[in-house]
Image 1 (cartoon, rainbow, N blue to C red):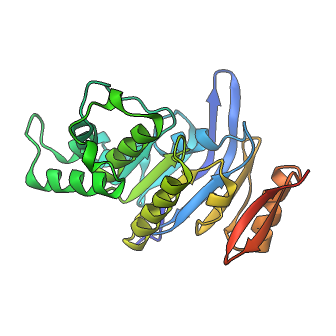
Image 2 (cartoon, rainbow, N blue to C red):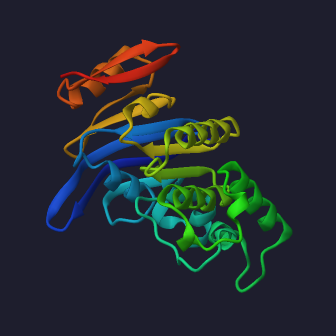
Amino acid sequence: MNSVAISAHSTRANLGNSEILHGIDVSFTVGRWTSIVGPNGAGKSTLLKVLAGLLPHTGSVTLLGQPLAAISSRQRAQQLAWLGQNESSADDLTVFDVAMLGRLPHQPWLSSPSAADHVAVEQALRATQAWDWRTRALGQLSGGERQRVLLARALAVQAQVLLMDEPLANLDPPHQADWLAIVRALVEQGTTVVSVLHEVSMALHADEVVVMAAGCILHHGAAHHPETHAAVERVFDGRLSIHAVADQWVVLPRL
């Protein structure tokens, strides 16, 4: 079995006339959670979109041992789930129907959702504590509530690889902790998770951390390793410091 879930090799990507990614080489191990951190403009979201097949690029991307470009869109949608920034969905759809969109890759064309689809959606909505709103319209929800529903949609896919770009946006601290528990449970089940996070302290809960700047990868290592902490501090120009407090890493501003 291939131990690499998703990878990019010699990968470059442009936005407009500007090259954003400069020959990226990175691999993400099966059943591990990796967080990507770095300052604004580092290319974090661009890298994640390239891995998801959402942006054109040169070089190669592989998913579960196959070239991404050779995988059908349907199979890719079954194997890889995506939660992006500012995701949109029709405001008049119910919460349940939004989450059910995550099951479309598993359904035959024009067929009704199966019992397995309903079970997957209920599990996803309960995991994100959105089950009680299942009959409400998405447009009636707050930003944080909407984000939990969109996370449920991604979870409902039950994909082997889950990519998330700023998944903690609009979530209050208790629900950020819930998100962390969801990710840990997914990893224990063998799911590969890659997340872009601005919340460095949350990113350090991951198994591995990728540190980016100016479209390049500066470091890729274990989240607990001193070299990783030094790379994180360095990429933010020494404006933060990482400390061990009560068996977890705390990030403090350095004034």
